[in-house]
Image 1 (tube, rainbow, N blue to C red):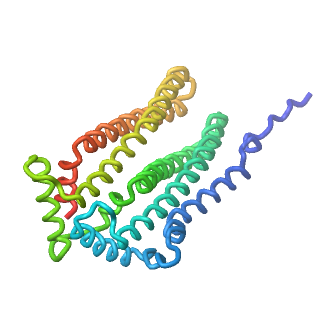
Image 2: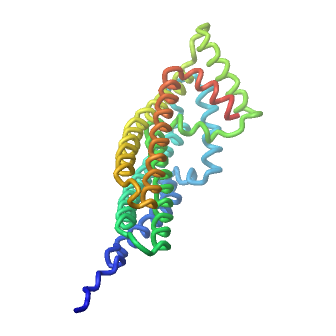
Image 3: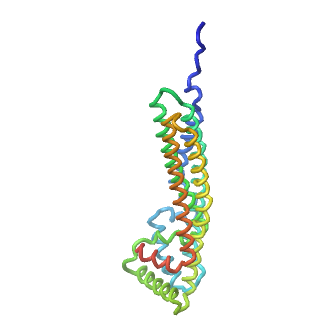
Length: 286
């Protein structure tokens, strides 16, 4: 009597679903690079889609804003801030969609890896390599989504790194005046100018948002770490390759949870003492 032929494990692999998800990942990565600027640039703001024009407009508007001595944004600065808000929202939405697709894809690959026992080492290595790549892209998408959230919540502060070098010219004079005001503010000897209040308030919001966003992310990685360590302990020596993968992912989750806890602490501290943080920012950026 013939022994029944066991079904091929390749038949269990969701080839079509994985192919569709990989195509979605490629499309969303492309959209993440190209779409935010296209979405944000509309009407008279279309010139800001060019990074050179955006930086030039921002520098001129920032100097004008500081010289005005008012907390309210000047029309030119408001135009740049509105553009950056739309850019950040588009970036955050696309990154979030990318993250969701990557989680689904990673789950399918992980289940296929666990089912794929016995021979076929090359297949398992391929699944593992693809899974690691998915995790790496997912971490990038997660961070990009957080950055997009910050940019939407505090678009003015998010544009400050775009100012670039301020070693000479009107921007250097503006930065010197800001640093003097920040020094006086931290020393308590002089009341800050209204424009400085606008910079500080958005800077605080920028770091509060990052600190708040870090909390649930840290908890998720902490939970994943606990689950993976337990699975690793239950696995024992039954499947050494699977055990090594579990330990590797569990360790990575632990490190990532600690990283986001650090993000929370650092950004919470900066939000509590924004003047000192801004001084360090201006000294370090220019």
